[in-house]
Length: 581
Image 1 (cartoon, one colour):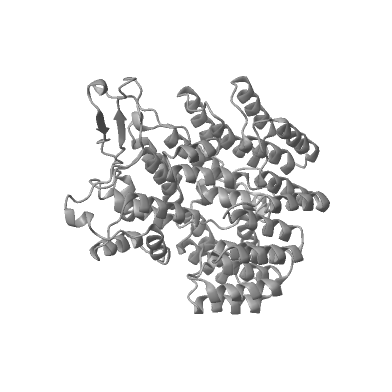
Image 2 (tube, one colour):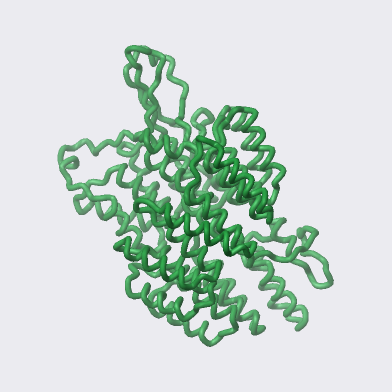
């Protein structure tokens, strides 16, 4: 269940600590960007002790892209340091640490240095307005503070952890506009590529990748693009890129295989998962902890619990593998889905016994899994331990417990903890409120939903696209088509981690209502929204949308299926996969 969380978490760790050998060793199998970049040395490297290389190729894009995102279209400056070792002149030390320059004044170096956590808190309090991070960083420097690359890298890591992708990208904008102080590494470029895909879409990220000089596209950058394709389930592009990585010898370790296995797991393609396992075995690429976790999860997600347990036994026999809490979290989620509560509870006890250090994530999973299993008392018990272990609980922690209580059908408890969150929150996160709102709507409590929505707005909560989608669901259920379409329009304009599209099942419901009532005007409004959100260009999406009489929209595909939008089988997997690449 938590396997993609760990993969992506370690990618983030590697980005943040690119030359820490301890961290590198711990996370080398859990991040597509883990293999050290080994660039071709300059021809005169034997005659120089140090040589710094920059990319000077112009990487600007056409003006058709939004001005607010133009900063990441500028040329990336990749900094690579070569050092000739006296004893071995052909050994090259590649450092991804940026060469941080001052403005060339002693006064600047003497400025007080802000702690990264102070900068993060100030930025995280911002709304997702245009150039919010840029304006704030400018202000901090104007006030006489010194800001380092190390601090900003920590800030970006934290912003990405909490899905503040636009603000994180703006931090890079600020650094990119100061190349004399902040040299961009290949890790930075890989991170920006991922952020671009989330803020501006995959096609923009692809163009960013294509504009990079070929000799600067190392395994980190290829790995970042592969992750983008896998998250979007773009199978053909992911497979093509994986072949290119094989040809470049970038697929000589476990992680690219793990990422592709995650794709095939989501696509329920067990045959290709087994094929990748065989390829790794033939190439003597060791299966790591994440390989095993994905493998057993793939069997479990298809209901093959016997095969899942066989993989676990093989895992236990592998002397190089020590199953961790994510292993048991994955198995527990599969047992919960199959109704095997006894085995699920055994796994949950093991997870709790293996929590170490200051890692909050296991608590989130324990709370979530117990909620899915209907163990309301256990949800409260773990929540109490969690609160006693940490001074501050982030929004994500409150989201986990409220979501668990809602799934356990304890709305009274969820409401109480929501009120507690309101009293301690630093900023209103609509994702937390959406949990309560969604419960009201899906249980036909329209009046409570409307009152709650008004309360959210009254206390400064800014509805996101999902908030508007939930409200539209209530309007559709009550055949208020005009109000539902108004919510759709607001959802399009609302900010979120990715571009919003209406759920196919909701589109079908509106089509049925307008066709039966002969409401041509509302149908045209709906078609306009679908056109605006790019739905017509998404063949997989359009395959769910029929016209009256069973025909398809122009450009629609065949094979209308039942929408699985309400299936939360991968709700944690997908959630965290996007969260912390």
